[in-house]
Image 1 (tube, rainbow, N blue to C red):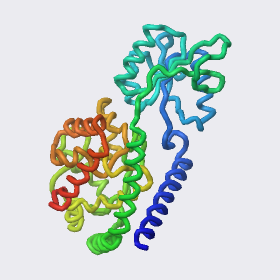
Image 2 (image 1 turned 180 degrees about the vertical axis):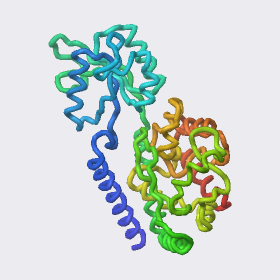
Image 3 (image 1 turned 180 degrees about the horizontal axis):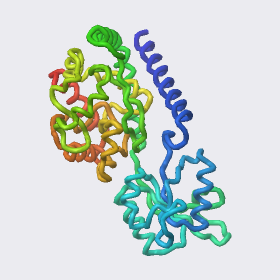
Length: 354
């Protein structure tokens, strides 16, 4: 009976999380919907604009056009730059796919494919078929056929299992930790005035903002005091961190030491905005200070804990932390997630938080 009850709770939690994610996607609009692929079109001629217009009118196809690259046209009217700008624009716009829309140039196509492979982007071509039907199976966007030149291989099964584990573990944790959450909420309320939960906008996957939840550990109005403390920042780079932050409450010090202030983010995990393991999400203010090379850490869903947190938690260099996040992304596996989770449990038990 116990296991049947737990299974029922898990199913309910997964269904609720899915419905909330769908509802949030509908409310926030097409550009922030989950699964939307950002596309750059190479060629701002008639074919390129036909393709862009069709995708714009059919959001159910799951593609959002970021703009055009064209070596023959000046910037404007959707043209964002030349093909030599592909790497920078693809990173800044979190592009997933490049579509070549003629006129076809062999050297240009090869340059784009080589650059896209380095950036782990899919590449498709819209050939001029002169009114003929293609003999091989292709993808159709309206009356325009697309031929795949390069496709990134994603660990679909592994990512599915990662999501299942996120939902199962987050649901069980919320159920088992419910009494502790109530006690912590009471302690926060008794210790200082203000809300129980601190909900701040953070940069999620592909830079999409989301509300990240934490137990409040600072005095009310702490964000307004941040500017006066900025010169005391002890981290190199766009992130802000100081030891003995005067804004932290007595209970807040305890919560941070054992990382219990992060527990409300289990709800973010259930809704799919976060994962148990991944690069930590930064405030939008810090995100705005990213350089182009830092943006690759946002290629995946942010996490409650990550390789940076268990390997170099007190490392002051932002660059070193970003390198660890990118190492995690490039070498990700379920086994790696489990090792990070186990190390996180050990760090929490030792009270090594800040």
